[in-house]
Length: 159
Image 1 (cartoon, rainbow, N blue to C red):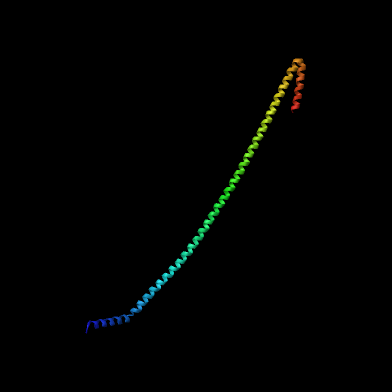
Image 2: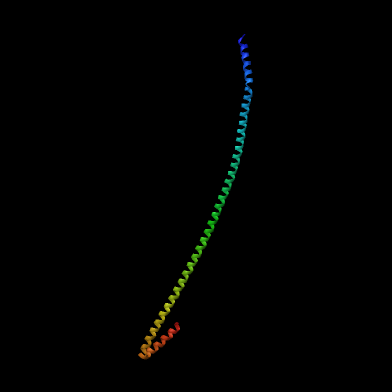
């Protein structure tokens, strides 16, 4: 008997033992299990990718909303700043107008006071001049009577 024969017999026995032990079924089951696991992992990966795409789309939408909101806030701040500047300019103009009116009032009051003072001085000088002239022409008693009468007349005209 030759070695090829014994190798063939050993191969047949080996294959019979493998088939008897259901090794092909176990291999098939193992491969099916592995294929199912790979299929499941691929499905999970696909699902995760879809979720990631949804999250990305949501974050992009939120980013656009945030950018729009930020632009709105900036625009509102600019508008409010313009209103504040306009209000400040208006208040400044009103303040300057009030100060100018007050200054004009003070100037006109000073003019009135100066005119009154000049008039009072003129009256005092006129009274003094009249007294001097009358004193020179009239005796002391008649001069005093005339002075009192003139003084009363001037006081009544001033008041």
